[in-house]
Image (cartoon, rainbow, N blue to C red; front, side, top):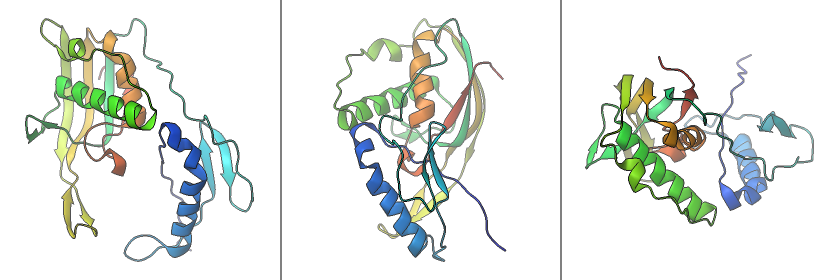
Length: 212
């Protein structure tokens, strides 16, 4: 038997959480028709949101999928050091060039931009946060120990009929110093991802409450 068990994550923002049944219907159609070049058929065994099962294969009912996505920063307080572990490539364009080394300011800028866009277009919220002080690094004692490397990755776009560069930085990065004002945004970024290609899974990282 060549049966394999796999999993994937789907993140739905704001008001579009209401449309989850349509996403589920689309995934079921994909399961029946197959995915990829070889049209691999699969079965959706279960769907879990915040540790609660909201769908199980064979049951014609859907659990409470509304209001399941929430955010609670576990990093606020006296923390002055974190480690970011990038699971998928971090692809950031700064001053017209793709970053091949981790840059904290560019990372924060990309993260704040994504938070603003998601809030405005998906949550009908206009943030009243002044981002300029957050991006002004002058005089701030912030140290970065990067153990990240650039990885090359491409995907083929059938719509554009060409290969798309999906490469970026992966690995771990320790950040310490005057970072308390950034912790909420850093923790939120671990949920929403950051950089280019986030809709395809890029920019996913986890946060550790210690440096490497």
